Length: 310
Image (cartoon, rainbow, N blue to C red; front, side, top):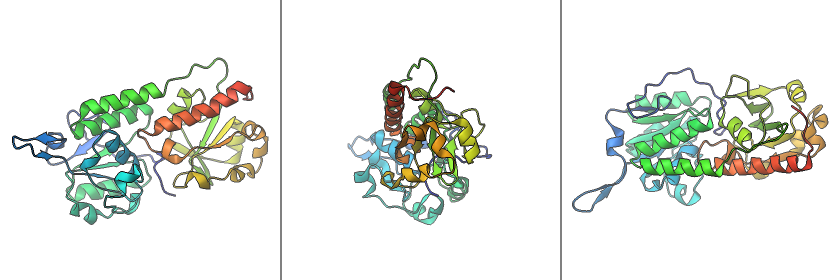
């Protein structure tokens, strides 16, 4: 099971440098930020930081900040923006990153994360290789915003980071709801069913879009659910956002044929939706599209008044 969806829980501690949020660690031999961004010399020669991105979300953040020209390579799962990543060297998938290949690209900074189970081993390997590493581990929407700003600061474009965060915030307004909020089950994986819990930016997105996550009080990033727990929660909407699976390959019949699920409000009213993991599982700029699609699902349900009481 591949992808970036944050059901991993890290017990490792990071030590942040001054100016970087405590949750984001920048481990390096010098001040990376001092070398970041475009530097115009007297001869008008412009130099930019050499950046390697390990994880899709970081690649998308760098590009959204207008810093695609800094990328010297990406992981093999980075697929957006396609015109940018197509031309870049790819050095392996999330847990199978070729550290020697990364070293050969001579990056000044590696952007990575702890959003995939096992990523801590890759982070340790990158550090052991002497690379400067900025590690993101978002657990809420505010954490995502903080990571965007930390990356912008490290690349020498802090104003762009603030502008991107402000734009995302404006495009994802919190919806006021009169009465009960529809209960939304987002599935990271179909077997076993894995859903976001308290420490997930998706729980925040559901809330902003006018719904609620039935497992928002569970102290985890995500958790596996057996059928009795789902039946007891009685979700009004089921959203397939299966990690590492293309949206066109999501199959509602996999949800429909589960034992006992036909009684759920979501299935009784045909509320099974597909929202690509690229829009919900990657903590970056395209969460805006995930929010938009969640809001559309919830708004349709609310207009028809077919959701159950919490």
